[in-house]
Image (cartoon, rainbow, N blue to C red; front, side, top):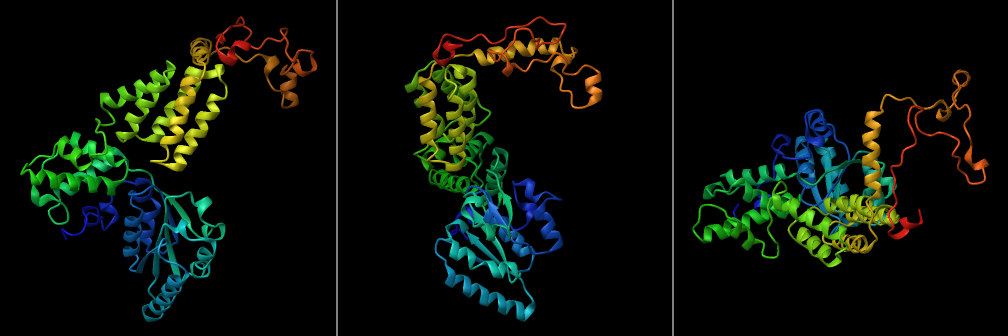
Length: 416
């Protein structure tokens, strides 16, 4: 067993031992229902690496008492599919046993290879469990996809990863329990952060760290052991630590100050310490409105495009669009007029929440509304020369017109 990697040894065998993906494994969730009813169903497990796709497929297959075959689309083809089909026919004749084919990285199959599965999935000879890290609507052809139920798996939470790591340290049969190595929650958090939502990666780091710890005849895991196991990573404190918030604050404030080089530096610090790239992309998306706004109206488009790109690419490629948006936002003209306008409007809106919408601005959708005066005296501004009118009030009757938006003199906003 010691020659088998820790991540493999620690694979749970039943749903009740599986940690994470509660939306799929909870009592009334889909996978629990399949296990309870023992009814085969073709599934597509979609999610990032190390979140439990293979493990869940194996657990479900075992619960069905099925003939379970594992293949990888990287090394398999139509020939292997035909062999699986013949094996499935034999099992069906001998004991009416279902055959579950787990096809890892199914997106690597071309259209012809995917089509070769269709008739056997459709007639129930094979229950297909596919796994992919790619968007199935793009990488799996529609004919096969329509016969699969897509289950989206998420990156594992920090708490889930810590539980997985602690179980591995405590387990004396499959894990590292025999060594009685101690590790505080902060150390396990560091490993979980380095793993970036990937349980397999976290367990590999833990195993290497414990090996170093044992070589020093120590009984407690330290940051030094973890750092030695991952020399190419910069360790940082957990997601709830001051350093996590301080570094993202440093990035935002550097970009706000138009210091492009400092912005790139803090981005690199965050990414190399294991920060979630999607989290960074969200912060840049907010910054595009809060600190750039109408001074460069296209900034929000750039930030949205980068957010989408980061989610599609993942690391390490996501570092490129993130660097691009940091440079773009740093060099863009700045204005906080958008957030200032909303905050001022919010205060007034709360104090005047009891004021009714003027009849002029209400939409007369029926004759009863018209009899009440809805839409009366409304001016369709496109029929005026300037496409605007100062004679049509747009605030509640009891209010004076208010000024919330005050354009800055920077960039495009100076035109307003």
